[in-house]
Length: 166
Image (cartoon, rainbow, N blue to C red):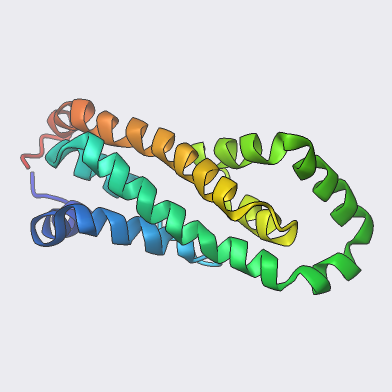
């Protein structure tokens, strides 16, 4: 069977850019809020070809830096959103200030949930930037470790099912 176009494209990225390709794809995927780029399948494929631990690290770094766009939008749009959604704003801020924000950011970053929301909220509530970056990185690292090692251990099994040689 012939390689699907997506796999051919991913193989070219791997051969030409390696770990930097993982970094930039995840950066762009998380920096775009309206049209997110699905980077998860690429992390899976990269994990099968490159060292999955390094793939997860570079993917998590790129994704974490990309999440700063949401934080910046929240930070910059505070006055507009605060006036329009005053009661909701106060409840959310209280929730973040009670220490739940860190765990919420990790949870959203470690799952396929739309973590742009936590970035916007973090900026909106002026959540500590260092804590935001650390929580985002931890969550993204968890997710990308699962994806990269899933690719490392599972890609040959999947390729055999579809009778594809890589």
